[in-house]
Amino acid sequence: MSDLPFEQDVRKLASAVSGPVLAPGDEEYAAECARGNLAVAHRPQVVVGAATEGDVQAAVRFAREHALPVGVLATGHGPSLPVGVLATGHGPSLPVDEGVLITTRRLDRVRVDAGARTAHVGAGALWGPVADAAARDGLAPLVGSSPSVGVVGYTLGGGLSIGMARAHGWAADHVRSTDVVTADGELRRTAPREEPDLYWALRGGKSNFGVVTAMEFTLFPVTRLYAGNLCYAGEDADQVLRAYRDFTAGAPDEVTSSFALMRMPDLPFLPEFMRGTLTVHVRVSCVTPAAQGARLVAPLRDAAPLLADTVTEIPYADCLGIVPGGGEPWAAVEHFALLDDLTPQAVEAVLDTAGPGAATRIDIVDIHHLGGALAAPPPAPNAVGHRDAGFAVLTLTFTTPGEAARSAASGTELTEPLAPRSGDRRHPTFLSHADAVEERTPTAYSPETYRRLRAVKARYDPDNVFRFNHNIPAAG
Image (cartoon, rainbow, N blue to C red; front, side, top):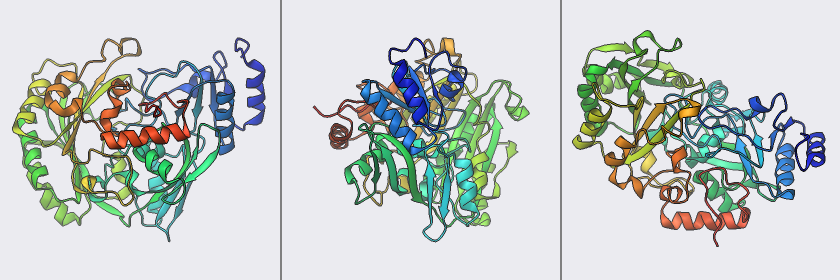
């Protein structure tokens, strides 16, 4: 800490908080700043490992006293994510090269109220422990696609559940309340009748308004799913994608699914048939009895010879294992597009750009079926918009930390022609590192929603203290 211009104040901060306070050169500094995507590195002037809500307040007040910006890091996922994780918002969208970084992974408490069908979780809680705790009471949350995805960041961006998205909507739609430390260092509770504007903005507005330290949300009385992964050889991509298009055209809201083309490296934790080659995957989750689910999935099973078929009746929490990998750190870049429909032209574009025989750098193309309850108005209004999209497309390209900048455009050769409207229609759940610029973030919201978000920002963070994100500046 000896090179810091405010060394004495940092030492006072360290003595006042429960968690670690670290500066460049300190032994644990690099580990505390580490994140899931190795292509984005953080080098803040000070990092505070918050162990209590009071630690968060102290860190924010310290930052304000020294006119420093604040970034927040929970689990290290997002916006560039591990394999198959389609849920952004779990870490700063820009490298934190100045200011204060607050890490919240120590705030990992989980409490389930079976009578109220709710879960109350801390900012560092992961979906694996939350799903397990809920399952003990016969309940289920709207989980992400990996046990290691952080609950709070995922939910603030919208939250697309791998298990029940089309049946119950966005995770943000079912948030009952939040506890948040705003830019003045105050701890506030938000709910429909407590700080209602802030409650509205946090759900979809991501990390622009403060540090969410805890969240309460609805659980659902679901214990089992008919779910899993169908895997095919890369040369069968054409018939499988066309079968998937037909499957989604008639799928009831109880079925959530995605299609993926995956060119995976030769890594030991992957199934042998996936290593170093193109494979095709259809992930399905049916909130139905097993016999009904089997009937719905039958056309997919008949689409092409199967390399693997894990679709069966499973305990709800096991849906977190549908996507292979998901916990290891990567260096990667990704891009997103929203589609109204999976048209024949869209199918051709995907196959021509990333199918068998294509000369492409793209390692993963992931197509998620939206619609159903995702398109319905939420129980309490929030900032998650553009609910009319039928599909979300992710492209992901593996790189190295040193080559990330040169790979930044990889994937746009598919997303830009695939979705002509993508330039004026994004979604807060599907915002990449490349979208963390002034002209792109607003396209995740309607003009009216964006104006309201800026007004809320002006009230709670007029100096834009929280700006290492898909930034929404204060009005005026």
